[in-house]
Amino acid sequence: MPASRILSAEDMFGNPQYLAREMLLSAKLPDGKPFKIPGIVPKLSDTPGGVEWTGPELGEHTERVLAALGYDSEAIAELRRNGAV
Image (cartoon, rainbow, N blue to C red; front, side):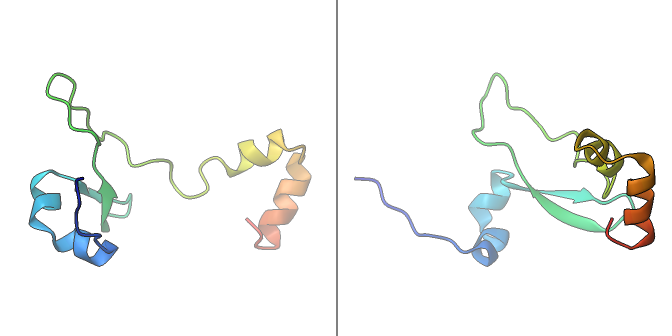
């Protein structure tokens, strides 16, 4: 039966195998601040995959989501004025 050590998140960031297998990748936020993101799993030789986008900016879809939930533009503006979004 296979067995392995259970790694904490802190262990993963310093583990040579994790780093060699690119299980944690370096990326940058729009303001240039660096951070780590998960790599692609599993690693396939013919179609290895890759990370090309780190996701939407904070709040990028807020208005569209609130509108889809039934909030009109005035209600959304009120939420913004009150600091809720």
